[in-house]
Image 1 (tube, rainbow, N blue to C red):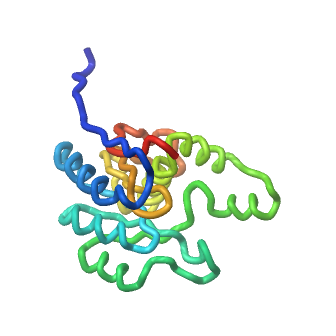
Image 2 (cartoon, rainbow, N blue to C red):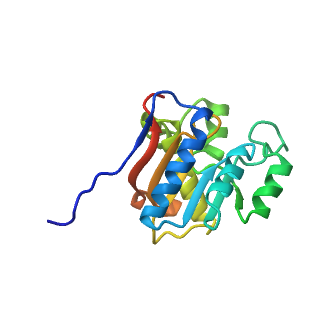
Amino acid sequence: MSGVSRRVDVIYFDEPGIQNTEETLRHAHKRAQELGVRDIVVASTTGETGLKACQIFKGFNVVVVRHHTGFRKPGMQEMKKELEEEILKMGGKILTASHAFSGVERSIRNKLGTIGMLTMIAETLRLFGEGVKVCVEITVMAADAGLIPVDRDVIAIAGTSRGADTALLIKPSHSNDFFNLTIREVIAKPRVK
């Protein structure tokens, strides 16, 4: 026998969405404590989920990954300045970068109406839900930025549109070593997309 299996509590939400944020964050915190995980990567557009994560994961390495500037409107950053300041005050780190699964490829798709390999990877991950895709993506982005280690597990937290409804235990990798990333556990996710 190579190891011992054990029962782990997983939360499956009946509906995706912001209403699951608090429970997702608290359950992820509980699992982080059980496993000794100290690195947390969380997606946050406006900063609300990022700030809640910093409050719940106080003392952890919390990396808040936001949309790149200009994602919705040229030159505009969607994260609220006051929430950005609060996240930083609480010791959280903020990562602003092009999305690992789109970036320039999104521009090609929009201009030429064609897709590339990154879009195919993203769409495949979306079979498990939007949050699963985002968890994997932000983990790669945080690893590439040097904000999380790649030699130990992290917990990634994301959602479907707003808030958090998905949490995964992930062994990270850099983008140039993407296929060595491993989703080790589902901590929480919606049953439906």
